[in-house]
Amino acid sequence: IGSLGKEATEPGVQNVTVKNVVLTGTQNGLRIKSWARKSTGFVKSIMFDGATMNNVKYPIIIDQDYCPDRKNCPGQ
Image (cartoon, rainbow, N blue to C red; front, side, top):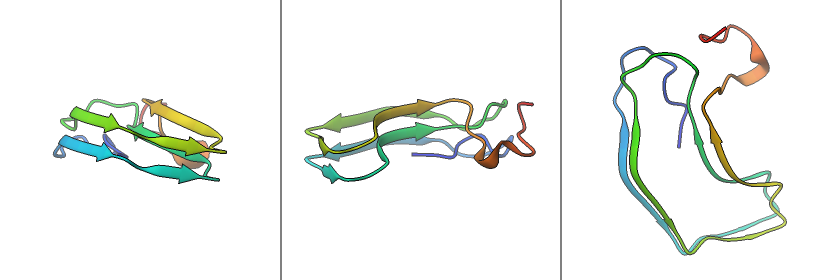
């Protein structure tokens, strides 16, 4: 789920359910990411249920300072 907060005004994400997933050989598993800036974007009412991960480098990530390549980041 993401990249929330890239824009100052944007909708949020809510009422998402992820059930009975199998992730194998991936870099990221369950992930929520947002840019480090003020925004109307939000994440709420998210449920992960029954996730199985095999050989996943980062199984769970909540990144509140997302900025690809660390260039022109709004929170800098």
